[in-house]
Structures are given as structure tokens and as C-alpha cells.
Image (tube, rainbow, N blue to C red; front, top):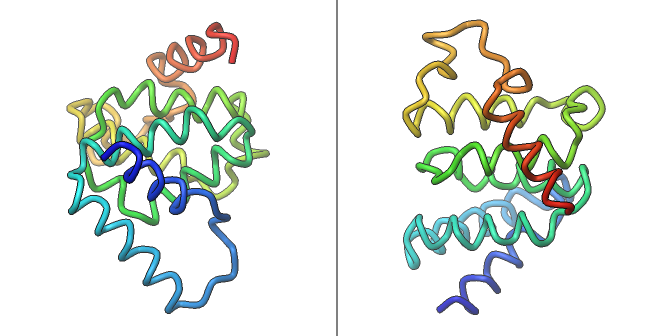
Length: 151
């Protein structure tokens, strides 16, 4: 099972978010992501997606590309275990330079969707209008942990 899910994950994420596919091709890709979640369940799918992120996305560009694909596949609509580890990885890879690497704001979007879903209501923009992921001490600590891991 692990090999099959990881093969599917690699196929889903080993592409550019803005790869000029047709609407029909995009719909087929989204359908495959939905089928993976249905077939393996969200927990196993997320484990595979997270493994791909941590092992294959070593540059700011590849990490942001993954974030955009994760969003397009509906990942933000599911609970994420250890959301700080997950989000911290992105900020570690872009060295908190959102201006240069995340002009579209995908990381802000992920944080304000994933953290409240995981029980961290202070990141909910309906409750805390001033929340800024780059200033969140837990995201900063997670990014520092990734950096100290020597990756």
C-alpha cells in the first residue's frame, strides 16, 4: 500500500502548479487527488504528501509549489496532524521571506485554515484580525527546529 500511495503522491506533486494544463486536464488531476483520499483515507494520504514535502521539496520554489498544489487538491479542508511542523517547514524553506517567495499568500491561507481546524482559534481571522503567521512563535519555533536539524 505504501508504495502505491507514494507513487500516486509523486505523480500528483511532481508537477508545476501553473503548468498550463487545460481545464479538462486539471479536472482529471483533481479527480485523482480526490480518489487517493477516498481510497487510502485522509490520514494515510496526508502522511504520504507530508513525506513528499519533507524529502522532495528542498528549495523555496518547490516548497511554495507544493503549498499551492496542496491547496488545489483540497488539503486545507482536512485536519492536519502537527500543523506547526508542517507550516514551519514552508517558512524554514523560504527563510520567512514571504515577500520574495510567497507573493500570492498561500502560506497565510494555509495557516489560517489549518491552525483553527487543529484547535488553535487564535489563528482564526474571524476571532483575531491581527494574526500574522510569520510572527507566530510556534511557527517560528518549528522553522528553527527544521533549520537546526541541518537539512
